Image (cartoon, rainbow, N blue to C red; front, side, top):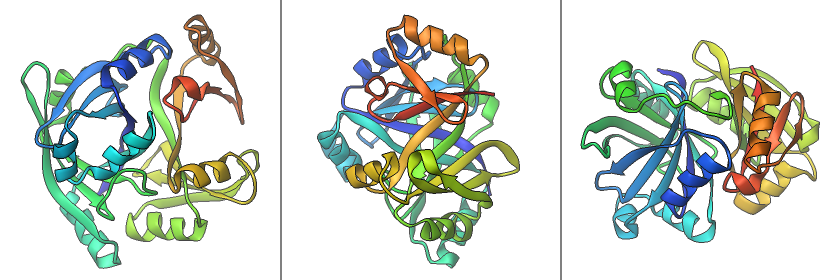
Length: 290
């Protein structure tokens, strides 16, 4: 059963450089993650609670390609970085696999993965990947962690972020056809549609989905209705993750902190600010109070 948002995946060509930029330019507490054993990738984490941001890079292209991560390799060859995927956590990944199979959506998994942390400790989990590819797709991948949450947080500690960010509130996903996206998220993934409206400032129609019983996090599907940033994103990068909305306690204080770090922001409807995409590896980070 899918019950919460887990993490956002941000690709980069150089992990150390991106981690330092996220510290120095954005005010995040970025900590080493480790290496994905046998997968050719390594990461750094920006943790808020159970939810977090993952900066990921490829250290061995041949190993990553052999582990079905060629789409990530190709993305990093074409782009210096960007938002490539997001994960939803589940408490019964086998049942999710059965639901996807019965609804007619092919998936790979569940399969085991692990990460060796810099201190030598191992974290392990299982993944389920709809469509067989988790990068730059209009769907999430699913994760079920091995072991209790508190044990994992004892190893990957919650950060103290000078910018005031405390949670991921929303993931925006660009889709070419909203009705097809609605079917994907409701029938195949089993998520609850919370509403539909027009995101006129983005030149798009929007559908909102909630995850589990919480309304603290939502997924916004965005289909272009005419010229605008959503249509531009679809033309440039096809369907897939588009923006992340992050909650802060004091929006003005967060803006002040970013300005002191040399990072510009501008208003973003209805009550947030958009961080300069040149500072975020090219995608839309929106800060909002709450």
